[in-house]
Image 1: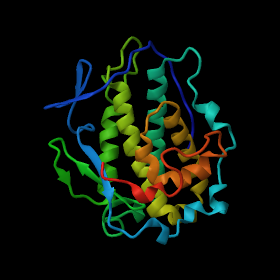
Image 2 (image 1 turned 135 degrees about the vertical axis):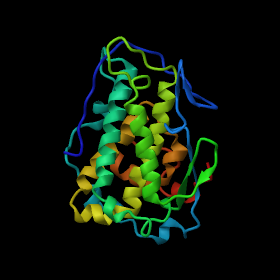
Image 3 (image 1 turned 30 degrees about the vertical axis):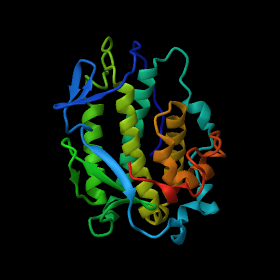
Image 4 (image 1 turned 180 degrees about the vertical axis):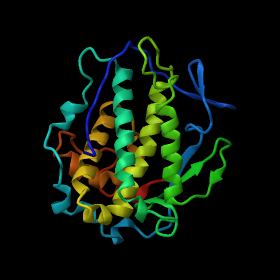
Length: 263
């Protein structure tokens, strides 16, 4: 299955903000190297014509109804009693990373430098920035590789995502989780925008929809994504999450994707 849920428990540690230093993101007493999310991602309109001129197959009712489970997602994302917040964030973030990576791998052969010359989602184009703040010209598959490689380094770093009893989370843990979620959202958005037809042909759209609903509602529950960041997919979020205990889409509602500014 491409979708699952897991959680674990350890001692509580207070989340905080991360700061950039010359050697990387400062996480409490630990510094994450520049290669591990030290680079920044920015977005700006990609010069394409308004998304309204493009048919969004993923919004067709017959496809948005597809799920692999009918569970109550809002209840699923709530922090369980006696579970540490950071443990819950770590467990779910790691799970989302693995499943989004797996979902992308199903269409990766169709996402090439020729078919996807930019990392585009609707009328927004995402750019990767290195640790020096220099824009890195890259195709969509290269951008996704940057994301997955950086996130992989973080979730396997014991100083950032501790797995041993007694180890504390860095003070900037929540901030790092937000950065990870932002990058993972870009990947999900690209799959819908550029590769939904392939996903449909593989009959994996039910998995993709379920993963998207779970991810978005989890991010909302803990304020992990800025509504301005997710506005590019508000129309889909409105359709999928309104019937999954998620309420209305945040960030401006349907059509907001036509007004995404450079970030």
